[in-house]
View 1: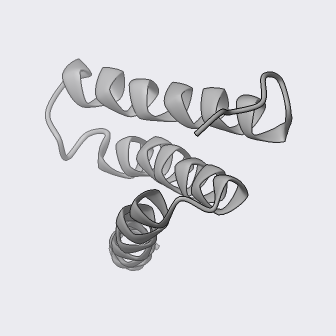
View 2 (view 1 turned 180 degrees about the vertical axis):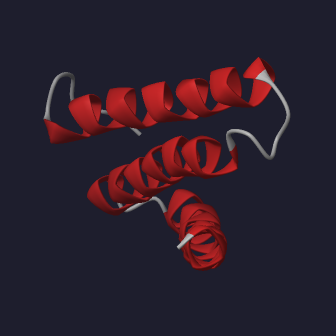
Length: 85
């Protein structure tokens, strides 16, 4: 499948990839508890971004996997903010 270069999906996928890399960097910085919300926020940005890319590309495998990931991270972040707030 040919992907057009530098359309909306190109920018979204790079923001999403950056979010996932930031999540990994934060996770590597220290104890999970110290950066739990920040890690999962960056992770959410990445997973949700890839969901958007999947929708733009009409790619069912990306849509399925990233929908599940997005739903899980929404729950994780909701639970984390209940504990903090």
